[in-house]
Length: 276
Image 1: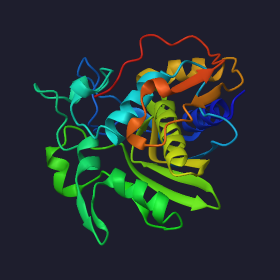
Image 2: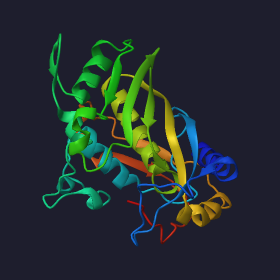
Image 3: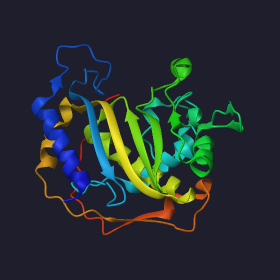
Image 4: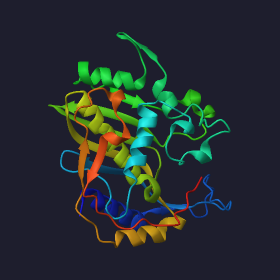
């Protein structure tokens, strides 16, 4: 069993056994039929992944490795807020007629700000500091910008990364205000694990730990049966992660530069509704 599977199972069991239900409360999220999408939740979940030991992708069911990478490149590399630049359709419900999701996600990564060393957007500032000031305790990205929230079609869920270099290892903390555990938890973990590998390679560092801090980790009412099925499944050993070692510029990475070897996993679960 992979560490990612064990963490996922433990988290789901804790939510189901000791979590708090939103039944009886007014909630924003709705199912496609218009009914309230209630959850069972835990506050303040912290999961820790040692990326030097294994790649944290679930084997209980398939996580779409390529599409997850495509989305993180869309945000961090293309710095886009338009779904026409994205290979998947996961953002379609939040896009306007032109494909824009407003001043959210990639838009915020591309906004330039003044620094003593010059003008940088958030991505380029992280890259600059990892190469020039690796022991800085100020290497942070943040896309939860209050002045722009009214122009975002969806407030950022995974909103901040804090990077910390210890020795030659690059560690990171992903902060997330809200996490749909069944639909998005491992998707986000995979994305930011890949991002950590990318940043470490182009900064001549070794990959270290990824901490995933979730303020509201929840399982939707219509997802409970699927989660209960997953946690009873057989898990497999983690696959081997491979990344093109010849890429030295962050902006040269492509989805094809990443692969998983011997990725054994259970069948995908069909019929997972997404609350919006």
